[in-house]
Length: 591
Image (cartoon, rainbow, N blue to C red; front, side, top):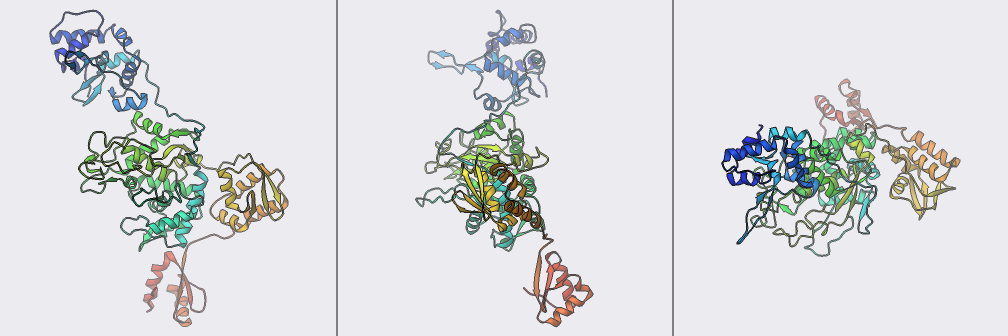
């Protein structure tokens, strides 16, 4: 619905109109409402408009430009503050003998007025057309970024790309081989499972090894170890059966796919999954499971964050606070709850987040974004992360009722900055394909008999250590030995041994020694000598005659293979059919 300048002015009182007239060039003797409206309309829609515009200060002009070039002519204080980190002056206080009045309208109110019909502040339609002719449109909001981070010994930088490529295969293998327990009701991993998965992470969890000093201390706890079983279940690669995870047919197939492709599928599935609300991990905020509709749908929240990640520069550090501001400045906003009054700290009545200043963007939306980026995007290798300990990393909740005993509002409060990785660009669909970047190194290597690799100059970077760890075992400080079993395992996980070869050639010189060249060639040749076609079940019959009867019958012979005098092998995906046919022969099968 559009509103003209005269219609908008008609909703104001005579004192309000007199305030506005005082900002026009010249003087007027008009006192009647209709005359005041006409005086303002003639000035604002005529040649005086440019002069009136020039009297605005820089911030006010920016506000008019934002609203005039908005598709609906709307002015958003939230959007403006997020972009410019200041607010334009709509009113100025006027001193009186007994204090201050509510204030006098500034000239900005000639341009931006409140529309009761629209329920927001707008530039009237006819005035907007005039302004667009000479007021330059604001540049699209950008995201500040940098190549490097400020040095701080308290800051931990985690490069997640290579870790994710390793970990996704490790987690699938762990589920394939181990009793990974989850709740039948919630699908959440228990304490024992979190400990097991944390031990499997090659570089450990983000805050691994931290021990509470006192029983009342807040515990950071696992992050990556919690995320992996949730991601794999949401992605359909693992399913809970009788309280433990098993690989689904898609999970078995994923073991033979490139890890980057698997990670991309997990990311895409997570964006739409309703398995889990990440905000529930902000466990200091209670009431999330109260009766009624409390929390909003997760898909729109995730979509807003992903949309913003798509415009982040690849390979450059973005401060979390700048990312959050950009979301608000670019209208990529979302709600976390339908009713903030139902959420609370410590005590339901006094600690409710419904009170002013308690349930704002910084408390609800920021904590959700922190959780999403730190626990899920980073675990999948989409972003590298730089973080502090969460204790007192953010002080924005300290004045809230019930926060006295909280060292942090969420375990993710320490996230300071992140960087979209090349793998992240692939996961986000910004790149059609992914190829792990060759490791640019400042170290020099030499080769010794027995497939030993020695660091003779420099120190291996974190990603270089991860690379070598795929193919070699450490012998002593600065010395590694290429290992056949580790190399074959890496190839099974989808890693390209050509990446190792390129690294050794760039740091050890050409040509590679014959034993090293031979080792790489043999591993490359034999690494995919066998291929998993599916899983099967080993079944023992009571005697050889029973096995012969079942294997020899046309109905069941095509569903099984002999594996011994009394033993049959049946593919898992044919087990139900095999069991049905065996019953028709008069035999039963028990576990």
